[in-house]
Image (cartoon, rainbow, N blue to C red; front, side):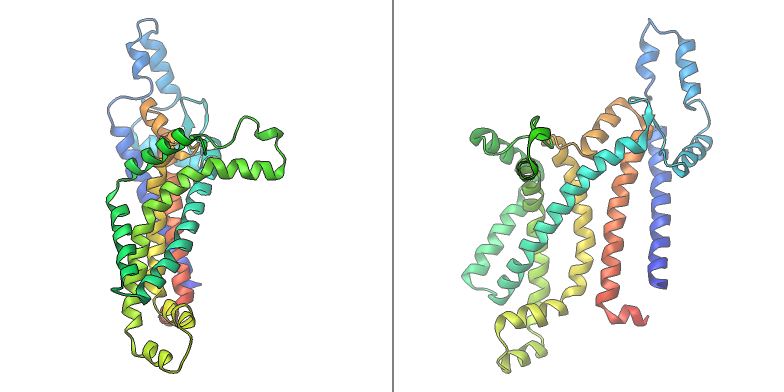
Length: 320
């Protein structure tokens, strides 16, 4: 438990540091939400000044941050100028969609990468291993932006999958199975883009970790005792290589999250990404900070989960 609380305290300090830097950078950026109103001759400067005073934008930066922290403690995360509502309800609805997309992509990426990496490492330097390595290297060289555009082009030309949104307009009239099919059809393209983008890195790390373990004496001894190859790979070699792969899990969550924001914007997925872009363009500072904090929370949550899994998998950490 002491290890868990220590990591939790580190996470809280990290979130605090990200909040300070985010608030500082966003607040010091030139202009604000009321800049266009100030340039509008039909709106008096007194009205603009009154609105800036209402939302505390005329106060010193430390006082504004203190007021924002008070709203965080109340569960509001600030106030959105564009939507005239607290930030938290706006982000919670979008965060569910981002979490659904990221979690699905992470699960599929690992489910595909682990068997491929194990299988490729057991056939090192053979032609199938070379084909897999070449294929993943090619995917690694393709930018996520180009990958998303190619998938969108294929969907538009074939009409097999929707090119945006979370549900069809007929979603409320569908039965339970129809709703599942509709959700899968809409999430397929963004998930496929994230999986193809993250799969090469996961495959190469898993293969590298397994290749090193397969040269160990205990693996040669297990093979010498006639233990089936599949059992040797998945019950002996894979657990021995688990530590770097568990650490990679936390990193992959952060990578998928950063990529998902771009994919959400390109594929019109109603997650945090489009909301963040909209808030930046509108200079809705508290909505921007709230979106950044939610994204950071997902990232540190993934790393915290990886640390806990590493604690359970490695007895040396428990001994320390």
